[in-house]
Length: 78
Image (cartoon, rainbow, N blue to C red; front, side, top):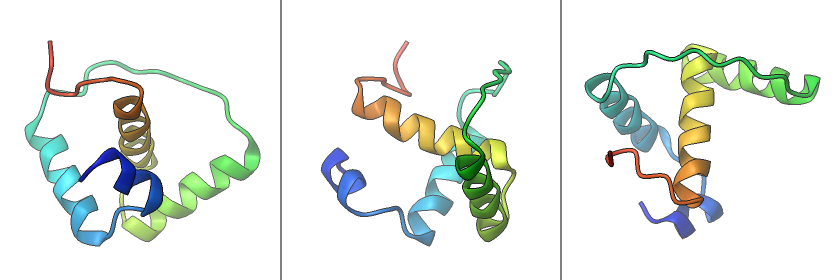
């Protein structure tokens, strides 16, 4: 999926499932980071996690990865 498509259209169920399968098979999640956010964003993240039946940290990682890729991050690079 192109960056333009990500900006214009949110991921559908199948695209999310593919992302989470890649995450499981990818590099291990070893680092822990804490961050503060607005109450409305926290509620939205928790609600999204319930909708997708995922842990809220998985939702946050997916969204941060997408945004980081738009800024030049390569999840497959060194």
